[in-house]
Figure 1 (cartoon, rainbow, N blue to C red):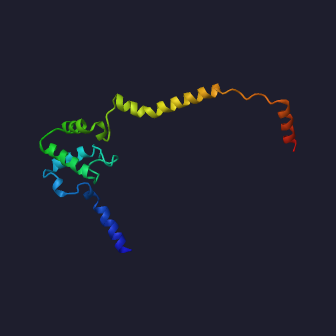
Figure 2 (tube, helix red, strand yellow; figure 1 turned 90 degrees about the vertical axis):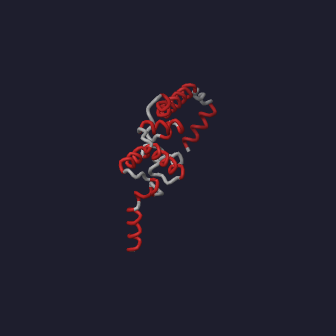
Figure 3 (cartoon, rainbow, N blue to C red; figure 1 turned 90 degrees about the horizontal axis):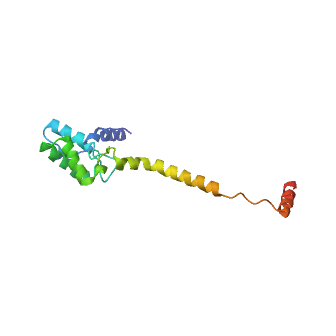
Length: 148
């Protein structure tokens, strides 16, 4: 039992090391490294899709982290680095894409779909003709069924 607890504790304490798979990825300047991590935490891993490139262990995320660090080392601004990534991968690479007509349409599409479906349902409901009245034979049969 103690071994299991020690193993779990070791795994939890090693969590920060998961992001950078190779220590040589880190920049020597702590401020530049912190800036790289901040930029990378705002960029989506295109393999994992719900993780930032800093949190992902995918090979593509490692490559993107390296690119971000190269751009930071070259002295580019955060905006320039993000623009470079967006130019190659589109707004999808951002974990928080900007609001524009494309994303507004994306966010509004569920509401639009519900409105269209509701309109169709109401239109079909109005068109449905009431059932014809029961014939005399059907009324007699119904009365017999209800009595028994």
